[in-house]
Image 1 (cartoon, helix red, strand yellow):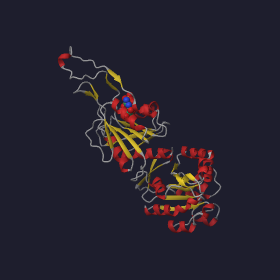
Image 2 (tube, rainbow, N blue to C red):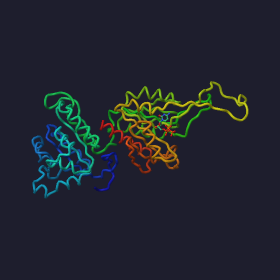
Image 3 (cartoon, rainbow, N blue to C red):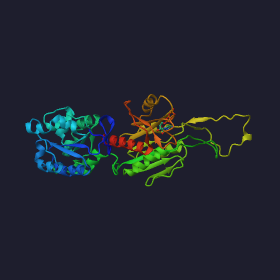
Length: 419
Ligand code: CTP
């Protein structure tokens, strides 16, 4: 694998690797009518500078001509596992190793069943078993086959292994039926395989973002708040807009102006933020809870300014009440929505964050070490660690908040695809 860094891809297990500037894309074609869209897919990859090799099952030959794929990819098409002349050109293990990303399109029910079981009885299934590259699957089949319990079980197994699914879509099917089963358009498959961060990659998603530090009033001129600048949440909102999502930004006071295109809901207190989040959450597909929510609020908020002479002696006692935990509350009702939380920690970052993701119940926790001067709060850069519910971690290098936002949205996209 070469080391350029034009595109970014999510690996099996959630890790990241950069797709090189001219990635090796292995396109595996199985036998379905949707195979007629594959030449367009090859052209999309080639236009972006990828090297494409195609391998197909015997039955796929009935739906798309190997010669067309060979001409468009500029490479011999492999079909047979045991054909000495084909193996001499590039062996099946070499083919599996060569790939930076493997795309299976169309993926038939039969192929997915074999893949889920680890069967390797032809070239395509053998390569699928042998490769360690990320795998993107674009299923296409009759609606009843897609909804069959066996297929549902196989899809679940494959998703759990980190295989990324694109589609299928609902519509008229070649078999005359209507429903789920149409293979996604070549452009959607291309996007899933080649650039999670491409503009438009979050089209159709409605992303709710909270930002800023809540302000808990003591009296009309004083409040309890924290050092959050709101930059991280605003960066997520901006990047989500760039990627084509509808974005609702629920913001506690900050000095930032809302990115163009977001729908802004201005709030002050934790209780107001909770009401706003609850009103928007159901209509959203993901929540990024970047706000620094005050854990406590004054039990009484005076309507008049507290004067010094009202206070006896040199001390004043402020009674505080615990605020509700918004993140934990919505995580409990999230269903297939993706919920991302943050953890600001000053010590034992990973251990504290692992504990926190358990108590919050979210899908991803973005933890940052607030003791660093180049990360967190007012800084434009951030060094974060991603923690997932199973406790696994991914440490990201020091990045701009915009880059961190992109990484968070990549994760959201992937989680949405696997649900
Ligand atoms: N959060 C929330 N509601 C609260 C407090 C926090 O939704 N009342 C969310 C924050 O938006 C953030 C995550 O929970 O996404 C973690 O916030 P953090 O302040 O690190 O954790 P706390 O739960 O407040 O725990 P502690 O302060 O004890 O570390």
